[in-house]
Each structure stands twice: as structure tokens, then as C-alpha cells.
Length: 544
Image 1: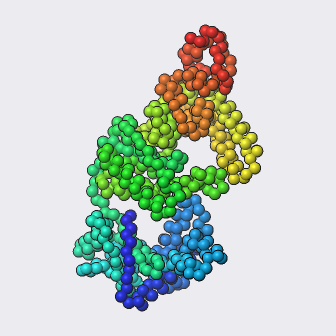
Image 2: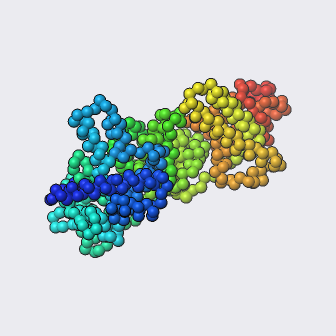
Image 3: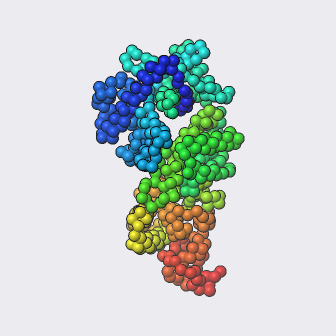
């Protein structure tokens, strides 16, 4: 979607005043529809009611409902309460409440607030109505006119003013499409929003960019997987060959988005999107991104102030949309994939293999998924999940962490800081339940070395297995729920040498039989129950 800003001028002052009256009525209709939608009113009933109350045609009323519903959805998507919206702007409203602001400064603030609150008119585009019925652009020889419907069979005409600043300005393309549509009678929809800014009238014209060419750069030559993260605040790019192997990677910091205004973040986001698309052009690779319908936002009082601030300023979907638009313009194929478990798979499988962090590894998995590859659980991880004693130890280890967290919660008096501790306890309970179900399966099965029989209810490709192995490794081996250093997993993943991981993490068997050394335990494929302690050889024979 491309939006172009233009200025409107009028040959008759009466036309401008009539438009201002229409904008005031539409703004009132918009606010009224917003409150009724929050109360649960339906669109069809509300549309008829608005026509009678505000004396507007059905299309204007329908556009007011559409705009109100869009604002409600936007608030809920950002994790905000739609009932607390202040039309005209909360910041301006709070400044006007301050009694020490008076005189000309107060008048300017009040004028700005009233313009935002009352100076709006919106009309959606319609292909069947020559692009737009209520606010139609009429191309003439040397100028463009905007015909605005004020009431039935009554229009006012405004002049559209806009200077072309560069050769590839989208405005020239828009005018060319309008002229072509008039000739061929094949119209395209464009939406028009008119706003009052500093006593001047501006119009914002939005339309979909016409892209008909097939992608030139496709996934046949490989792909660039993109993973955006809130902590650390960055974008991870992983270049993946057509065979699924990692070719290269890089990171783009997003910290410059923090403490910036909305317009500044928008500008920086476009710069980042251009940088990513240019990288894809240079490397001749397609782009793979996550397909996210909902993005979780931090909530006030959740105890995570810094992360919440980042999430609130995190225009994730905006960056992805910009990447898609720029990529299509350049003829680059963009593939959206299911993001489920990409971070966990990358963290456990590819981060230890390639000595990369979990963000790059997650981008690698996104790229592989876009190429059509499926991620199988490594065989050595399967062996670990077959070990009843290790699963039992892991459950007890998590129980210890839960008891420590409960102790912290008992001592913490700040109710806001208690919330992350409570969430931590709930997550630990879910982890214990997950491993408990696996342990009960192993207890009821015969001690045979057949994966399908030992965990017959869990499919090998199930995401539940990835979640189970994550729980089994993070706290007992990596000693953290969200580790950054994943190198201890490499000997376990690649070579299957459990004893090396055990020594490094300080885990030793509860009891050692002097008749069995380390090599015999490895040959038998069984390991006694483990506890945390300093590693000691049980007998001189085991030192070799």
C-alpha cells in the first residue's frame, strides 16, 4: 500500500467551509461508531442508525464504521485498552489539562487538538465506482481535481497540489495509471483521507502498487532467512544454500528504534528494509520471513520494564511488510513460513553445530523451512530422552529450581516484581508435567531399544519432542532457561558423549559400581541417577 500526501486548494471559500462542516460531521460519526462498536453493536444496525443521526450517505457511514473498527483492532493488537482512546491525541489532551499553559501557546495546542479530533474525512476506494465514489480524482489537461460528495447530488471541487521532487516519484506513476484507466475504462481502487492540519486541508491518497512481473530471484539459488528478536533487539539474517546448508550470516541492530517518534521509527524501518533487500540482490537469494498473525506485547505491571518498552516500540509487522513491498518491486521471491518452534530447533540443533547464537540459528531454520526441509530430532537427543534415570534427574533438578523461585516469591514484597516469578513457577510446572508424561511412558514400556515402542504416543517429528529435549537440556546442562552459550551441547549432539557433558556440568552418579567404569556405562547405554556434586573417580580403574 502506497500513500501520497497532497494539498487541497479551493477557488471559492464557501466550498472550503462546506468541506469543513462535512469533516466535522464525519468525525463525530466516526467517534460515535467507535463507542457503539465497543459496546457490542453490529455493523448493519449501526449503519442505518448513523445515516439518520448524522445525515450522511450510507457509504460515508460504512467508511466511518470501517475506520473505527480498524482503530479498535489496532489497539488490541498493541495490547492497549480500546476504551482508553482519546480522539485528538492523549499527549495533547494531557498538556491542555495543565493549568500553567495559557495565552497563545494554549490556543495553538487547543487548535491542534480540535483539528485532529474534528478535521477528518475518509472514503474507501471501489473499483466498480471508477476508483472512488464519494471522493473521486478527475484528471484534466494540466491539473487534477478532487470531486467531493457533500450530500446527495451535490459536489464541491478542490484543486490537488503536489510537486514532483524526483524522477521516480510514485505520484507520476499514480497519475499515469489514472489517465490509462480513463482511456481503457479499467479502473483501480484508491482510498482518500482528508485532514485539517494548521488550518490547511491535505489529502492522503492510498492505493495498491501494481506488480505483475514474476519474481526474477527465486529460492532456486538459495534463500535468506530473517528472524526478528526483542531480546537482544536485532534482526538475524542467515544465508542458506539451496541444499539447506548455512552459507553466511549477519545481524542488524534495532536499538536505534528505541526512544524515537512514530515517524522516526517509520523512516528507520524503511532504511532497514532497503538494507535487507539490497543484501538479497547482491547474494542473488530469495527471502524467507515468519508468518505471524499476532505479536505479544508487554503489559503494564508485568515486572519486565525494559523488555516491555522494546516490545511497545517494536514495529515487527511493519518491517516485514516493507521488506515484502521492496522485494516485490525488485523481483525477489518472498516466502512466509510457520514460525512454530524455529527458535527452539535452531537453538538445540544448529547453534551447537555451527558455533552461532540462537538468533542466527533460528533464521537458519526459517530459511530451511522455506526451502521445504523438515527438521528431524537428532539421534543422540532421542537416546537422551530414552534414559529414564536422566529424565528423573531432570525432573528433580527443575523441582529444586521451582523451590528456589518460590522462596524468592515469598520474600518479594513488590506485587509487580512478583508477576514474572509467578509466571516462572507456572512454566516450571508445565515443564515438570511434560517430562513426567515422558517418564511415565518409559516406566510402562519394556526396556527395549526401540523408539517407536518406548514412546508410541509421541511422533518422531512432533514439536512436543523438541519441547521435551529443550526442557531436558536447558536447566540441567546449560543451567539456564534461556541460555546464550550453547557450546556445551556440541559433544552431546555430535558425538553423543554424555560423560563429557556430565563432567563439565558437575554431575556425577549417586552410586558407582566398582565393576563398571565409564567405558562400560557407555557400552551399556544406561546411566544411573545423577546429582550435582564435584566429579570424583570412584576407583583408580576409572581414571583411564
